Amino acid sequence: MPQSPWVAVDAATIPAKLARELRDAWEDFVDGRTPGDADDPGRAQIRVPIVDSWLRSRDAGVDPHGRQSAPTLVEHDGAHSMWNTHPLAIALPLIDECMAVASVEADHLLVVSDADGMLLSIRGDVQLRNRAADEMNFVEGALWSEAGAGTNAVGTALAASHAVQVFAAEHFTEPVQRWTCAAAPINDPDTGRLLGVIDLTGDMSSVHPHSLSVVVATARAVEELLRARVRERDDRLRARYGTLLGPASAGAALVTGTGRVLLDPRGSLPEVAAIPSGGGMLVLPSGVPAFAEPVEDSDVYVVRALRPRSGTARRVLELRLLGEEPAEIRLDGAPLRLRPRHVELLTLLTLHRGRVSSEVLCAELYGDGGHPASVRVEMSRLRKLLDGVIDLEGYHLTCEVDSDLRHVRALLGRSAVREAAAAYPGPLLPESNAPGIERARDELDGWLRQAVITAEDADALWAWVRSPSGDGDLVAWRRLLAALEYTDPRRSLAAARTAALRRARDDVAAM
Image (cartoon, rainbow, N blue to C red; front, side, top):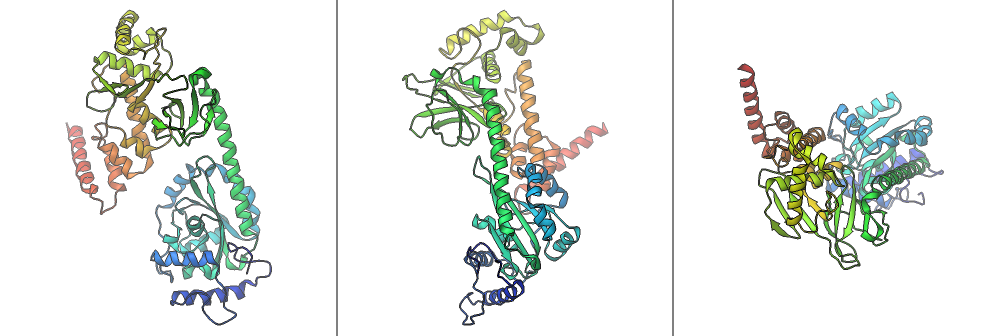
């Protein structure tokens, strides 16, 4: 046996002999006899990771005789679209470079799956691809997790969180036992999240002890490529947003959503837990309360301790601006009653983030017919109502701002579409006719709708169509109807609403 329990063969292995011994051991297992219990000294000793995988496959209800092949989750075109937007797609040239020789000379297929084990990309000899498709539904869009296909390198690497080689009858299902495969998981170097698996799959006669080494080396090279891209992105974020921190005395730091500190002039935040989705209140490891202000369209935040070392607590302005209910404004937890015009001013200041001139605010508040003097009057009144919140020397919020508008935009910026749709109660200040508010309202609605329509996520679609903005969206209701399982209780409502909107559309067309 090879020294490592994760490798199937070594240089001394005779593949045909080992395949026969593995088949005998597999039959023992399927018949209820534990591998290794037999007295026959020629009986193969099954590796521990393989026995563990067989047990998981059996418990998952996988048919060892393969009467039901790996399920197809999406058709080829859908899998191709998912691959084009997958984080590992950018690494395909590197994967080809590292594994092309092994793939061609050893007559293997080069495979990439997602984190669930669904095959996204299969490259290699056309005849070998066709054979794999015919014999075991080894195609893009098929689910090759252990629950979907039993013991195999892709599924077992995912289940065990370890690179593994699987040979011949070590595969749990009979149709796959004429093959050999080696796979290694790839993790996101920033978040630690599993991204997917790379795999070499070929006929069992082509098994090689170095296949697993090639796959592991390629996985590490891909992670290093991703790590380099993270460093480049960090540099861009520091250059772009470093000025938002203010002087070192402000005690602010630039932090990614995963909690990595990018820039901390004061050195006051050596460690930060992962930022809540969309930002907001959090507690630092030191126990000090802090506030994470999202930077638009990027998964990066300005984090400030609410009670810095100077002992002066920073004020927190809470703005609930989305939805059909009246806007809610709170300062340090206390509710405020403000005129609609003042709410619009606060919204515009939130949208602009930095200082903004009275001329710009005038155009966004009143349109072409306004005068900057009107803005200065309203701003003077607002300063008196919100003491210490607006800069005395310009139009700029000096406090922390916890805004549902910023929260939803931040979620969209980090592609958290389902969370953004769930956090969206409705349009921005729907009663406002201020030009700047109307533009921001339409932009957010359009951004969220496009993200939901293209995400192919039933829960995101459901959240959108249940909002005032999405209730009359026929396209979204149709997408939802197609995405829901037949047993989903939401399907009947989706069908009824789709039919009603179609009739309304046809009636308008007939007029």
